[in-house]
Length: 115
Figure 1: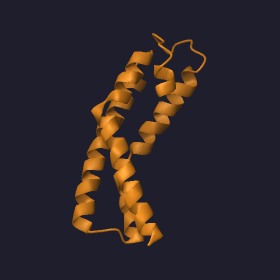
Figure 2: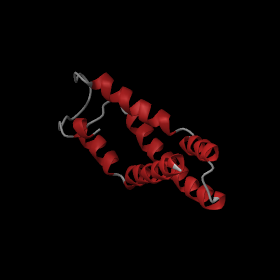
Figure 3: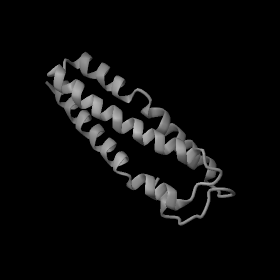
Figure 4: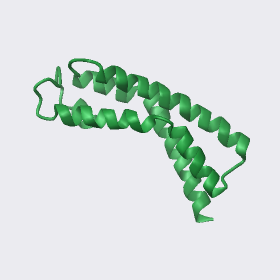
């Protein structure tokens, strides 16, 4: 997303990397579907807890993933996607929060796996 945003393109229509951009955005959006459930299953397999705290945090992750997916689907629904649109979504508090959520859960899962 950062690479496309830096290009300053008014639209992806006719751009050499248009299909690549849309493919990346689609795969990103698709990966967010039930991301919290995937992490819940991984945490259960590793015995990560406490369960109430984990459930609360994964609910936050789910909300951030839902908001990010909505922004991505909105972009994908546009006939042309400008670099500025991608830059604004990338800067969205929802995307930033989601990435931070993922980093936190990943570190907890790594820690549980190492034990």
